[in-house]
Structure formats: C-alpha cells, structure tokens
Amino acid sequence: MRRPALASVGAAAALALTLAACGSSSDSSMPGMDHGAKPSASSSASVTPSVSGMPGMDHMAGGSGLADAKDGYRLTSRDTTLPAGKQAGYRFGVTGPDGKPVTDFEVDQTKRMHFYAIRSDLTGFQHIHPTMAADGAWTADLATLARGSWRMFASFTPNSGTGKGKDFVLSRTLTVPGTQTKTPLPAAAGATEADGYTVNVKAELMAGMAHPLTVTITKGGKPVTDLQPYLDTYAHLTAFHEGDTAFAHLHPETKVNGAHGGPKLSFHAELPTSGNWRLFLQFRTGGKLHTAALTLRVG
Image 1 (cartoon, rainbow, N blue to C red):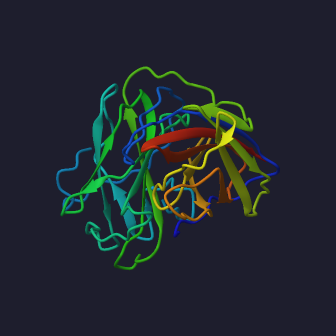
Image 2: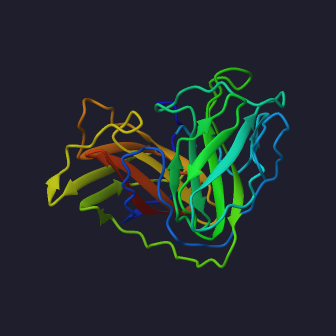
Image 3: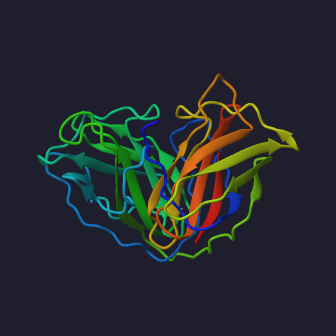
C-alpha cells in the first residue's frame, strides 16, 4: 500500500463514532450530509487552456493537502460554485511542471485517482473515483451538496515525469450558494452504530509518533466476518482536521486474505496536529458500502 500514514496525534485520544451510512453497491460516491460551517480558505489557480472543457485523494502525500500546487504539479479547475440540492459534476485537471495536463497516473488501491469532497464543518463526506478524458480532463460526479463551503481533494501518483512514483494530495475550495446551517462536531466516544453494525475504536496516540489504531465491527453482538474487499483492503479510513479541513489517510495494515474479513482491522495512525479530527471509515458487506463517521480528539 503506497499511501503515507496519517500524521501523529497528541496524547491519549478519545474516539467517537457517529455513523452515517452510505450504502451504495458502487464504490464511487458517498451521498452528502446536509450541514454547514465557517468557510475554509481557498487557494487560487487557473485552468490551463490545454485542459479543455472545464468550467470555473488513497495514498496520502506529505503535508495537509490544503494547497493546490506542489513540486510543480497543480490542481486546476474553473468550478468555483456548484448548485445545491442536486447532483453535479466537478471538472478539474492536473498539470505538471511543464504546464501540460498530466494523463499518466499509477494505479493505487485499484484506482488512478481518489477524489474527496468535505464541507467546512466536516460533514457531507464523499469519496469518488472520477473519470478522465483523453486530454487529461477529469470529472467527479458528486452527489447532492448542501449549501456552504466545500473543499475538493485529489489524491494521485504520476506514472511519468519528474513526479513519477511520488504521492500527491492537492485541493481547491468551492461554494454551494445559499444560507448554510452549522452543525457542531459530535463529541468523542468509543463506539457507535450504523446500519445495524456496531463499530468500536481503540487507540492510544502520541503527538509526533506512529501508533496502531484498531477497529472492531460487530452486528447483533456477534463478530462481523463477512467484510468484503474494498479498494484492496477490508476498510478504507480517511480523516479531516476541524477548522482547516486538512486531509490525512490512515494506512490499513490488515491485508486482504480471501473474500471475507473482520471483525478486527488494524491501521497505522499518524496525525500531524492536535485538535479534533473527523474520521470516515468505509467498509462493504453484501455488496453494500457503509460509511462510519468518527470524531478523534488529539492533544
């Protein structure tokens, strides 16, 4: 697994899971959740003319993912707003140090691009695998977006050029016009339920150090052993920091061994800054994708 681990996080963490079920047999999108918050800052970049037809991540690269450019690679998009209350396509591209569209990407966890949308109050999470046209123009088909400020993350690894083999996470913000309602981040807790599943999380995290994080999934008091492979693992875990929506990916350590897994899953957890992190655990059973939202407090 190529993705860098999450960054390290402060003193013993209390974990809270508020599960939002995202049950789709497709692995390409998570329905949005209708909440809002203080907008996050947006970096500016224009789409290069060569990436035509574009109006207005999961391996995790070093850093927070809050910039739209790094080492000569740039996330470009003309989309600065999208409509509320209906599905919409977010069009974007990636240009290299030479200013030309990047079209050659490595496959990571079965996909060439991992795309994430998160609202500024850490609600409305969507994890999408967009499609690329021959000219390097990508389209992420987003589910309904709630009003407010959103950040769009693209996670990828170039397969050629100066960035060959290097993981990148770049992002831009956009606005869904209209009155928004802020939803406070749920308090930390050790377990929660969703879709009939109970998720327990155990971790003792120290700032600046890597530590294991263990997730145990049960249903009706019995261990769940029918987790199906999803993106070359039995569960996918990403996190966003409260306040700035910084991105991180927790590296799965439980290897896929057959068509069914569980109930215990291990992750390599490193978080860069203190405060609240909202974690999103995705796992599949019976062809249905579930999403669990977890609040992690780090000192």
